[in-house]
Length: 294
Image 1: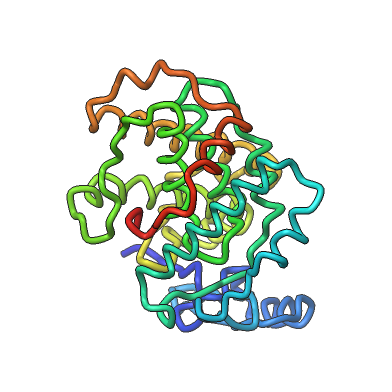
Image 2: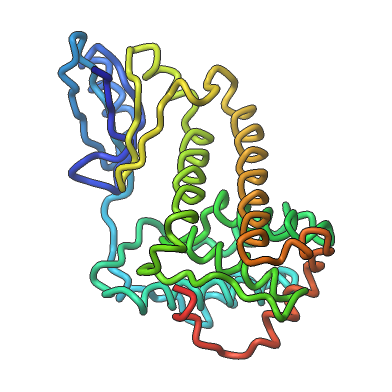
């Protein structure tokens, strides 16, 4: 019998694990110190564990998106043109992801943060090999999490654009959500990506859970993180670096498998785009219908 703790509160997905203890008064004290929206959940193990969950006050529906042109231009003012172009395309991808779902089913868990797109682009090895550039682009967009939802889906679409910018004849496997052939090998990459980014931000909290006898942490969507599978005993700053590197390698491997499965291993040795070159490619693409990507 293993001990499982939920990372997101089972009745409030906008709240995530903040603190844990075997002493309920300790958790209550933390709750009052932190303030904000919180819930406490007790786990009736042989030695009970009490977990404090914290997060935003609420989530909103996708039909409440208000990221107008003026709003975005104001926040991108002074940034490189490449950042502006890529951010505009990313926002269009978000809207496309919304359009293929019912708006009232598409939840927004945070604000859109355009500056995080810029920081993601600053950490890509532009001009390196194509798998590295495409993999790092996907990875850093996921790690920075700039969008209020659909960060993995939109990052994979950006990965596709990155490949097409140097290989126009490349045909990406269909990414439609109902394509089970695609999902069978892509889903494990996405699931492990979500595990890595969760461990990266929570190694100290997860180490404490492990010390309290917890075996597995479960994210929303039923994604389980077995604590013994990950190194947790390090400073949180070291964890940010270590798991960012693992995530980049994971996404680069994803690109290499895409090339293998599409019979385009010849692209592995190709040089990836520069940042300005990628932005020019996106800008020349016009106002296409991105819904087919999802």
